[in-house]
Every structure is written in structure tokens, then in C-alpha cells.
Image (cartoon, rainbow, N blue to C red; front, side):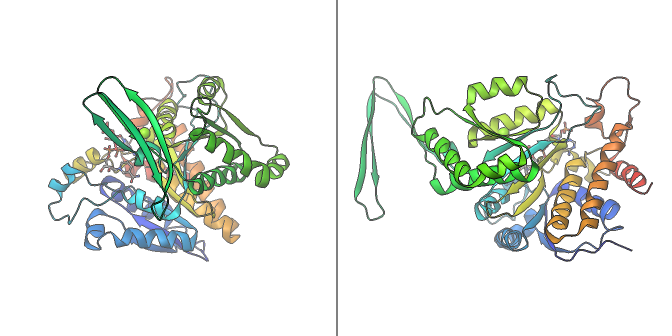
Amino acid sequence: MKIKMQNPIAEMDGDEMTRVIWRMVKATLLEPYVGLNTEYFDLGLTHRNDTDDQVTVQSAEAAKRLRVAVKCATITPNRQRMEEFPELKQMWKSANGTIRAILDGTVFRAPIVLRCVKPSVRTWEAPITIARHAYGDVYSGVECYVGEKNTAELVIKSETGDVLQTIQTQTVDSPAVWRIMHNKDSSIEAFARSCFGYAAATKQDLWFSTKDTISKIYDGRFKDIFAQIYESDFKAEFARLGIEYFYTLIDDAVARVMRSRGGFIWALKNYDGDVMSDMVSTAFGSLAMMTSVLVSPDGNFLYEAAHGTVTRHYYRYLQGEETSTNAVATIFAWTGALAKRGELDGNAELTAFAKSVEKATLDTIESGTMTRDLAGIAEPGLAVKTVATQEFLNAVKARLEI
Ligand code: NAP
Ligand code: MG
């Protein structure tokens, strides 16, 4: 008897090697055990192009309606991809960007910790989850270069064109670069709520850090909004759960993180999160061993792998090679979504199944059966058997049925 799902999840299919793995994971580890109930959206580049990218918008709306979604990695076209896919009507925007703009969320990334792959920071025992604000700052800033001595004035107007503020900036005595950037109260509030909510849901401490000593107004605004929302809406809940909210300067946070045991969430502004998430994931082992979930402030959850479509492996696959691509992040995207669906629907059987797939996956690796990327970083002394992706999934399936 297969496990039933009362409510569907939004399923967003993707591109290249991850699209291949997507099918393998479903066929080997999910469909034999669960009556999968999904609303399917094909976000493969060809279909995004055929639908003028409307399928991406529809899939995000489904994620909002169904509250749980699982997404495969997708190609973000660049100039090179435009040559590779001459049929593209335009250089479509990143599907993740479009989905994030609709869901207005925060991305939480946590390493999947193994005993047989030790983090390069010796004190880290438990995962460090990075919560990255995904709106504004330098990512939607305006920049320019002026090739002579110059002075700039910033004029800010209201919706109707009235001048609200005129700010005299520096006069510079040489050619210079300039940048203007912004962030919105509404987005910072949504970021704060997602972080506090996720910390409560996963019962972990929340750290937040900016450079508010230097950037008193800009970073100060982030600090103040976090503090206000914590005081008014989360302090009591944190006390009840025995978890803490901790604000500190980013330099101090970096030093503390390096000495910590891990096991907390570190919230960061957009750029800081972009950089720190790569450092933390690399120090824990591999991008293929990271979970990634987009949490919206109104409680919608989109699970995905943190890595891309693994193009290099896909070209080898197209030539008939059986590749040893790591499927763990894709497996955990599915189990994350199924466990959340089970939790929201009161379907304990579904949640328990998802957890047992995760355990079987980790036990398979700890027993020595793993893909090539992990074989290269496993602790010496373990008898390692390097396998292709399908063989790895078969080994997980065999464990699942014990
Ligand atoms: P990538 O797909 O993450 O792959 C970069 C390299 O990392 C691979 O060549 C491989 O190294 C290694 N790797 C990544 N995932 C792996 C896995 N599961 N198992 C084993 N090795 C893995 O990044 P990319 O090549 O920069 O990007 C490819 C495409 O993905 C781009 O079109 C980009 O737009 C897209 N992308 C999508 C998302 C998303 O949808 N969330 C995110 C990032 C990138 P080796 O070749 O050395 O084995
Ligand atoms: Mg980065």
C-alpha cells in the first residue's frame, strides 16, 4: 500500500543533469512508496521559452496556493546559452529570481553533515544555516564611473515628483566610481519574520550581523527592524522554546562563527550572505551536500538543491557515460517538501517516510558507498566504493527496505 497524500505539492522540473536525476530519484525512491500528488510545472528552458516564461509565474503562484513546492535546478540563460539555444525568444530572467520576487522570501541553506566528511573548521560539529536576504543592496544598485574630478548630489523625490531630500555627497579630487543602492522596509520586515519564524520552527538560535557602526542609517535600519519585530512578536516564543536571538557586528560574528560548534542560523544581508554561504558550504564539504529552502513570510516553503544543473556531467551523460553525479541535494529537496506536506496535513506517515529516506541516504554514504565528489573528501580509513548515480540510488533503496 502506497502512502497517500491528501494535498498536492507544486513540482517544478528543470534542466540538464538535474532533470535526469530528478526522474531517477522519483522512480527509485519515491514512486514505489508514495502515491505522489503534485501539480507539475515544466521549468525546463525550452518550455519556459515556449510559454514566454509564464510557466515560471504559474509555478510560483501554485507554490503560494499549495504552500509547499519542490524545484529542480534550472538554466539561467546568459550570452553563451543564447548561442547554444538559438530558438530562445529572449535572455529569460533567472527562474529563481522570478519565483523569489513572487514569494518574497528568505533562502535558508544548511549543510548536510556527515561523520565521514569532516568540516575544514575543526570546531564545527553541527550545521550552520545561512539565511540570506534576497532583495536589494548592490544587486539592484546603480553605479557609474566619472573620469574627472567631480561632485555628486543625490535628489530624492516623492511619487508626485516633489523633492523630499537633497543630499550633498563628497567632492572627489580624482576620477571616481559612484554607487547608489536601496532596501525597503517591507522587504527587511519580511526577511526578519522569515528568520525568526524559521529559527522557531527548527528550534535553533538566530544570529544576525551587519556593519551598523559604520553604516548607521542603512545597516542601522536592518538592526532596528529586527529588534522591533523580535520584541513585539517573537521574544516570548523564543523564551518558551529556549532559543536566543543574538545581534552582533559582522566582524565579531565572523570571529565567533569560526570558534563556534555550529548549530545555529546566521542571518545576513544580501551581499554578506552571498559570500558567506559559499565559504560555509565549502568548509562543510560540497555544494551537493547542502539543503536549500525558500521560506516566505506568510509560511510557504520551496525546497531545492543548492547547486546548478551540473552541465559538465550532462554533456558526458549525453555521450552515453553513466555519471557519478551526487543526488543527495535533490533527494533532500524532495524529502524536505514531503516532510513539510506531511507536517501541514497531519500526515505523520508521509513525514516519517521522508525522514527514513534521508536516513537511508546518509547511512549509505557512511557505509562507504558514495559518488565521486564525496569519495575525494571522505576521511581516510573508510573503505570507499565509488558508484554512479543510479547505483547510489539503488543502494539507498536497498537500505530503505531493510
Ligand atoms: P553547477 O551546476 O553547480 O556545477 C558546477 C560544478 O560543481 C560541476 O561541474 C561539478 O564539478 C560540481 N557539482 C555541482 N553539483 C554537483 C553534484 N550534484 N554532483 C557532483 N558535482 C557537482 O554550476 P554551474 O556549472 O556554474 O552552472 C550550470 C547551470 O546551472 C547554469 O546554467 C546556471 O544558470 C544554473 N544554475 C542554476 C541554479 C538553480 O536553479 N538553483 C543554481 C546555480 C546555477 P565537476 O565538473 O568538477 O565534477
Ligand atoms: Mg555566492
